[in-house]
Image 1: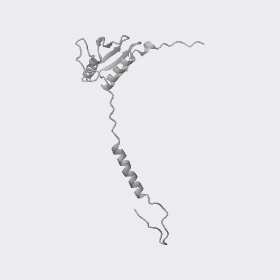
Image 2: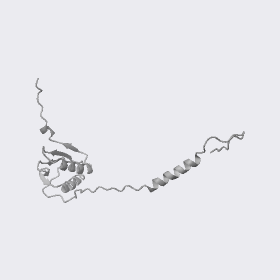
Image 3: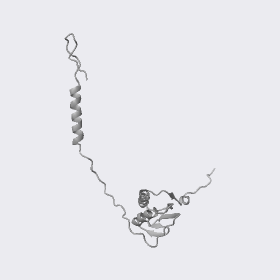
Image 4: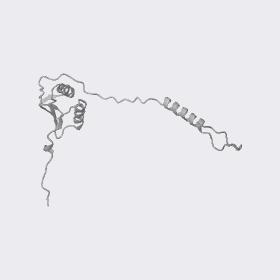
Length: 146
């Protein structure tokens, strides 16, 4: 870095030397970064705990149907299960090669909150073959009136 003490003719230097100012600013910036508290906020979530798979639950190696009823009951191929058992069942389908297809069918007045939690379980399990079924029950197509 070149420094100048003025011109050769003896006139004073008219530019301000900003090098010490920049050094002080960098030191202050580093001090502020060091003293900022680390954000340690946490959100507590009650996750469903895996439980044992009931004996009446069958896992089809090709296609399994998951239904959420209007009374907020979860059915796996027609057998009633809870969210913890759903975690275990989906985990047990990961050992089947090729992975069976999982079809999800929430009924018309099923709870959105429970359906959302079920989708979270399915997403966290990284299910690769997944589809929604029964959507055609909610769509009515009629000819438009002229």
